[in-house]
Length: 309
Image (cartoon, rainbow, N blue to C red; front, side, top):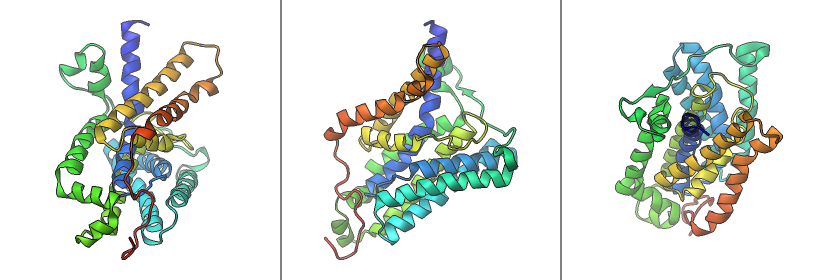
């Protein structure tokens, strides 16, 4: 492989990784307060749908990003109501949100765009080169010649690390995740904090979906997330619920996606369906090798009922 081809492939790694990392960062916030967020697939697909619609409606990719965040938020609110207020099993609640998001996105697309189910052209983000840095060998194109949502992702990683590990809000989140009854006894409103985490997760997951529809493909397609929401939860786990760990895990899975695309382009005599399985196989292999070494928040998946220990 030539140096130019390698740079192109590395650039695509970050393009594939950006939606995963954004969604995983949202999942990290809910994980910190012990909400098991299996709804990232539904959040992302609605973000992709509404991101495309917002861009089509406003003629602006930034308008699409805002609509995408609101679309993701709408699905997250369903998760919050089910898992926090009505105490539904969180795995069941997340699965229900995924099914709802997929079905609703298909319905809305057919209602908005007619029989085609997708717009012919929408405003999309274009790559922006960071002067000087984008010319660095190998990593320049990968890290510093990306669309704006990737640069936003960099900022979210840094801000999230600071918020979680250096602020009282982050300390309260971690306390709620590990010992909600003890946190409640100290005056921390557990369910309010869980709601805040769910809202953040919805906004970031919706932005991740928009990164797919108007950052990568410039359109919306039925089921275009194709399981990336589930991969994003794997990224949260492999990244050990840490923003920088999530960055590294997301790049690993983005690399798997880029490799399988490269193998398809190079004409390897392997059915493309098997190549498309590569990122998911990589997820299972890595999770099985790493998950035993990382401990989730102690109260993960458990509803909080005031007065119970």
